[in-house]
Image 1 (tube, rainbow, N blue to C red):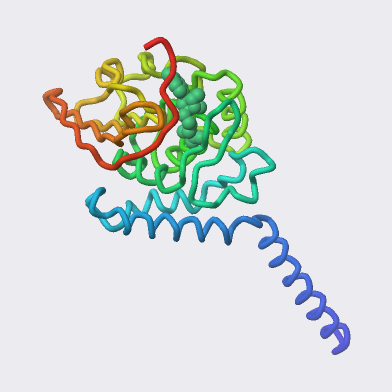
Image 2 (spheres, rainbow, N blue to C red):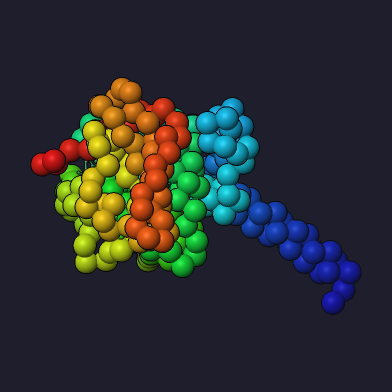
Amino acid sequence: MNRITYKTLSCVLLIATANWADLFAGADPFAESRKNMVLAIEADVRRTSEYIGKKALDPRVMEAMGRVPRHEFVPEPLRPYAYENRPLPIGHDQTISQPYIVALMTDLLQAGPDSVVLEVGTGSGYQAAVLAECVKQVYSIEIIPELAESARSTLQRLGYKNTEVRVGDGYLGWEEHAPFDGILVTAAGGHIPPPLVQQLKPGGKMVIPVGGPFMNQQLVLVEKDGAGGIRTRQVLPVAFVPLTGGH
Ligand code: SAH
């Protein structure tokens, strides 16, 4: 190979490499905002450490927050705001929860890679995706059929094979797959649904907002001990959409 050809070739290679780098950077235009969202969550965790009893969340949960493409779970016109640390409307008077709350609830479950988890209130499917990154299997129930359908298709498109979504009243749980290592409820009811307590494994945890619609709600951690005894702890005041259905 003569010198000129060699030079030309390395030049082309250099340009090609630069283009690839651009292409990769361009493949996820939200990467930077997602990093900033993770920083905002970390700051919120530090700010609320007195309530939640720790200054940092489980690194596995934070890594999941850094991976899940939240912009895929919000309506198209709201994508520019997808990585702000706040809830956003997803239609049908429902919201995708604030990223800090999603991270905190996932952390409180303390679920591992072998855990089977039930979510009540699929909504956009975002919380289910974050859970799916951390556990073996996620079952999620949504009462509004259109939301269930769209969450199911988003999760499928993004390749989350360990999630199953069905339409129904999550108050009653999902008997067929019970008992669960963890149960996460993303809508607030006036009390802790007894069927969910019953479907929790001994040693399992449930995280659930309890209280009236949009006021006086507390995020509650429910723990079932080996003998089936129940202990509850109020973690943080929160504001969730109401748990609807016949109960
Ligand atoms: N986890 C969701 C947030 C959903 S908001 C996300 O990550 O986007 C709460 C959801 O709970 C709403 O979609 C609402 O329709 C649903 N919901 C309310 N009551 C329910 C019930 N009884 N059973 C199942 N889903 C319910």
